[in-house]
Length: 116
Length: 116
Image (tube, rainbow over the protein chains, first blue to last red):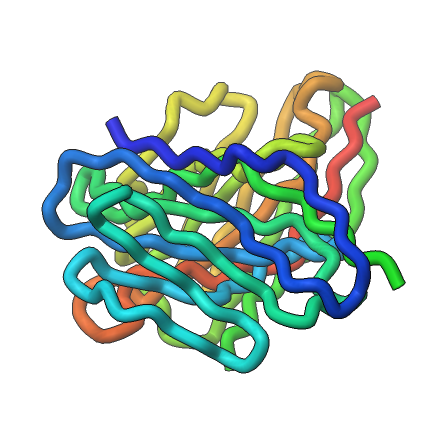
């Protein structure tokens, strides 16, 4: 069965610090997708990135970067020079196909607090 | 535009009430989802509709009844709920089928439901 583990329940940093959120996954599929979502206090889940299993290139988007390593089944997320607005719960998720539809298997989330 | 609109934003209901949650998207997405999220937990999938047909029901109690009247609209009818059903209910949609963005789920802001 698919499984996503986010071992860090809560992280607290001071503004401008770099922070890495860890994500480890388990799957028997050879083709799969990994996702990161951000959930601010308002409640809406905001899509950040999708990575497929054949693309191990790291990606950078502004202050955000993602490190995908199939060898260790990890898909870690780094925020550089964190800001107060980055405070949110971050979920890592893995796609799973069921009944011809795709569903997301979420990790338990990491709550990030960035203090001024 | 990646907007999924959910109404109402907040709902308080008694255990004998009947109410409905509404979700709307105009992105041409053909897959729509209902999730339930309890405090400090990840979203839990309830239902998936694919091309207006129910494709996944995650063994949800019959007091929750989904409906997909057309490709843009998804309803969740609530009847005889219990206090433990109080949660944030999230709707999402995705393009489904083929395409670069086919399995990216875009979420609404949710309905915060309290059952008294």
